[in-house]
Length: 434
Image (cartoon, helix red, strand yellow):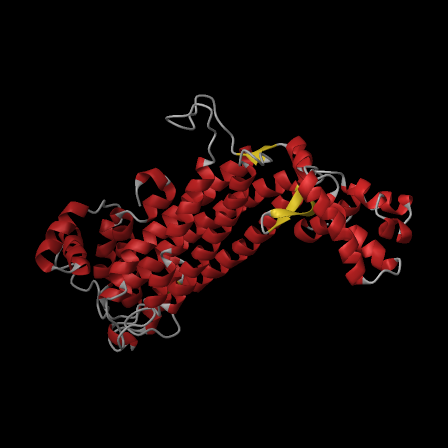
């Protein structure tokens, strides 16, 4: 992933030096387990740990791979340069390359998951704070982009909190799904390596043994993992789109923080563009782009092929690094987001009283008017408001059919804004707990 959309902690997980360090730990722990079983001499296992403080030379490994055309063999050759050929002769005993590659990949995904989980927890804290801050800040709810009925800004933040809380559960499940390792040898039969070695290595690396592997860990696990990242990315876009709408000049109910010295346009000095949330929309697309390839990786030939390998070398780093950056960026947007309550009320009253139409409709039916007639009475007055910007309540009070069924006091009562916010506390209790 390009540095512009990267954060150091997540990037470090995918650096070659980190990968080779994990490979080394897999091999060293496997040697320990084999020594415990009496398969290899104890002194050889101990000799491997002489490299525990070594910084593996990535350039040297690449140089060896240029000849061997095999990355794991290149690494093992380089390891022997540090440990000694005689001492290293039992390294990788009974193992196959996928034991190292797949177990390492899952370690990296688990570590990435831990960062993403922290990211989501940080975003949840920001959403919760803003939800309570604006619990009673009334704004118009919209359906199809059109004014519907009143809601509150707090409820908007609360629903995003609930969505991200579900994503937190999904991410934790995805972490558990991917936290498996396989040290089972060629085609996964343990013919040349004891299952106890796998158990030992997995325990040391914080994984659980894959119940049954072929020569690779089953890729349905990875498909589920990347699908989860895709869902989280879609939730990020969902929030970003709402903020982008709120920042539109004609709406201006909320906006990204605009810092001192920031410029919105190279041509138009007046511009304040929602650049961060537009960026988040684009980043979400890139995370979702990893989902289909991950699903296509599930179908491999027989006990293994490497059609998945090139895909995972790209989507593993790119999807996790991008999502980490996006979650952090969104947290910052929410944390500093500007809210304009006066504009929310002004927008809601742009067509005075119109958003109370359902209350009047229901009151008419309760007063004995058929639903068909009640709808006609309300709609014809609503259309006058749409066309002439008149006051909806005034139109109703001047309609003989309406006042025949409802008294002026009954009509007036239907325009109480508090009616629409009376259950906000109940919804908050459901979302955030009592």
